[in-house]
Structures are given as structure tokens and as C-alpha cells.
Image: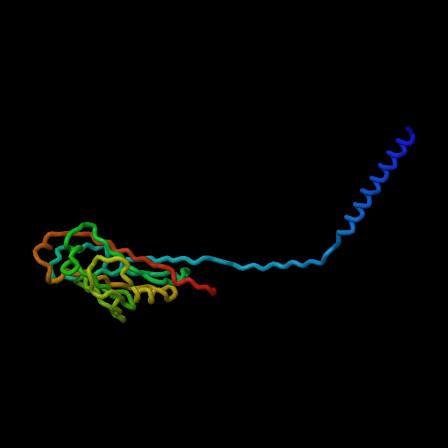
Length: 205
């Protein structure tokens, strides 16, 4: 009995010594290290595209009545880009008609569109709605059918890309002399939508 007890005690002691030895070896694996940390920050802000319009000397809201072949109606609209917006890649115009009739569906003899730009605001004549430019006139859209999609206003885009610039446009709508009796007594409402898009993306800002 004593021998067995003594043997057990030895085994327990041996186990304790072994565990202590393992802990001692594990302790040898830990050590200190030199470190250094630094940070950098950069401010990033997204741009915005804002195109606004205002009435000119003769507002686009002014109705046109009693047109006959050969008549021309002139209306002024002012486009602007504020100084806190990114430059434009393009400004385009889409025109639509409220009614499907020959005034807008006949591309040859129906209503025609022409757009010019003045370097200063257009001036209305004293007794008519004729608009004159006391500065420099630039063609923006040559005469074409009044209805169109994404009509490029390249000259206006160039002007608007000057910081805080303004583009003074004269929109001329005419009824050709070739319009026949099928054009009598008709009406339509034209909607002009100006769309600006961002400049080309830059991979090296």
C-alpha cells in the first residue's frame, strides 16, 4: 500500500514539473517590437450640374396666335450656370408637341425652329415682338423641323462653360410659305426642354 501511494505521488510531482517546464518554454516565445504609425487625410467633394432658365425680353410663355405661312415668332430665353457648378459637357434641347397634327408632324412644311445667341440680352422692338442683338450674334441651331430630340446647343455650351456665364438665346418658330390649307385652324403647344450633362470624367484630378 505504501509503495503504491509513493508511486502515485511521484507521478503527480513529475506531471507538475512537466507543466511548469512547458510554461517556461512558452514564455521564451514572447518579445517586444519597435513600431511607428502615421496618417494622411484628403478632402473629397462631388461636383454638381445645375442649369437654370429665365424669361427674356419676350417670354417663351407668350402665346403665338393667328400664324399664317411666312410668319416668324421670336421668343427669348436665358440659360445660366452658377459659379459653384462643374463645367458642362453638353447642353441639348428636346422639343415636343402636345397634339399630333401637321404643325409638328410635317417636318418640311410644318413649324420650323431656329436658335441664335446674343453676347448680351436680346432687345424687344417698341411695337412688335422682334428681338434684336446689340452685341455679337452666333448661330446655335440652323433652321430645322421644330420637333427634335437632343438637339446639340454647342455654342451655348461653350458660353455657359465660362464661370457663372449666361447664354442669351432667341428661339424663332416659323411657318413656311409652302404650308397649304391643311394647316388652317390648327393649334399646338410646344415644350422646350434644355438638358445639361457633366463634363468628361478626369482620371487625374
